[in-house]
Length: 130
Length: 162
Image (tube, rainbow over all chains, first blue to last red; front, top):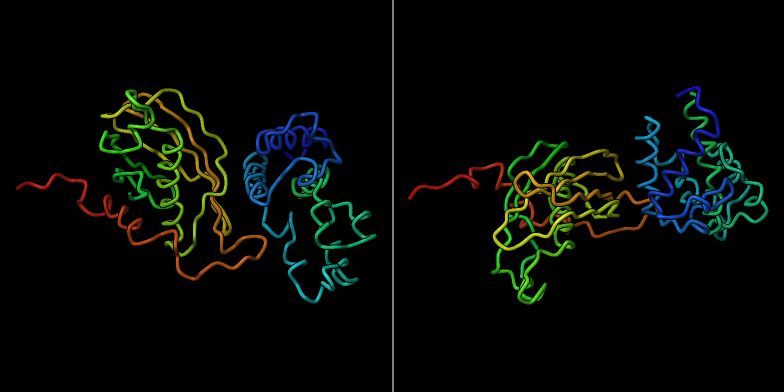
C-alpha cells in the first residue's frame, strides 16, 4: 500500500465515487466538488468512507476526513462564518484540503465546496503513508 | 396491516450475521394487486425484508441503544420472480460497523437458488454529522420488532407438540 502513486489512489477513488454516487467516470475530476458537482448527500459520505476503508484497508475516523466538530463549536463560529481561530483549527484538522478559496469568505454553508475529489486523494495519501 | 416482513430468525450471530425466513402467502392483500392473476412478491418488499433482517442485526450489535435507520440501498439486484407458496431466506452479514453507521451485505435465496442481493448502509441517527436531535424514545426498535429476535433466542421456531 505504501508504494501507491497518487494516480493509483485517484483511480481507486474514481471507481469508488462512480459506484457510490452513480456518476460517470468523466465527471470525477481532481477538482470536482462532491456535493455541488457529483450530487453527494450527507448519507453518501458514510457510504464513501466505508468503501474507502475497505478498499485501502484503513480506518477513517468521522472527524478526520470531515471535521464536523469545528463548525459545531460556538467558539469558532460567528454569524455562520468561521472566525480566525476556527480557520486555524480547520487548517490544522484538514491539511489535505485546499482551503484557499474557502478562506476568502469562510461561510460554514460553503464548507461543502472544500470536499473535492482531490481532497480525498490527498487525505488517503497521508493516511497510507503513515 | 403490520409492517413486519420477516417471519422468524433462523440464525443469529451477534454483530456478524443473521438469517431470517419469510413465507410468501396469498393471504397478503398486496399480492392480489401485484399483479392481478399473476401474484409476484414485490422487489421493494424484499428490500424491506432484508432491511429488517440486517437492521435488527445492526441494532442488536449495539444492544438496541442506537436508532438504526436505513440510510442508503447501496445495491439491489434481483434475478428471478418470487411466487406465493415460496419461502424466502434473507441472509445478512455486517461488513463494517462504527459509532455512526454500519454497512451490510445480503443475499436472498429460495432453497439453493439465489434470488437477489441487497447491500445496505444504516445510520445510527443520534450520531449524525449534522447534530440533529431526535426523540429519546427508540422508535425504531419497538417491542414488536425486538420480539422478532425471540423467534431465534427462544424455542419459538420449534414445533410444539399438542
